[in-house]
Image (cartoon, rainbow, N blue to C red):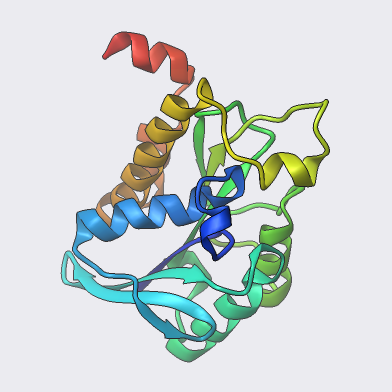
Length: 196
């Protein structure tokens, strides 16, 4: 069994904000994989389906970002899934807006949602997809991440969410190494757009 968890904040007011890259990616995956994320259990919206003969659970924690790990801990304990079979998707201010990076494991950095996940699971040995939202030195961090993206950012964000969903599907189909080889390219989001 595999679990894919996108981090975000529940509620209409947070839908189109930088902190909801995980939720937006889950919406794309839900549509692509034909798995509805509607069932409320373990303080999360969940959807269960089958991909390549394997059970897959799609998860959107409803605990608000800073307590994301609480819901995920309950899910991981119930299904007894090893950490390497969990993929977490989240926004990252340390990456340029529109970039996507996959890592097989690692620390939580400055992200409070990931800090909660690592603390609650008591491990950082799980794959993750980081979706770049950039940073703005003029706007306080909290206001920036729960702020809505600009018109200039919109196409970059849309492209990044699709690429993050690609990463999750590659992980399910080919494993973490192949996923990193395909997703972690050096090109900038702008260059990708120009090449299309």
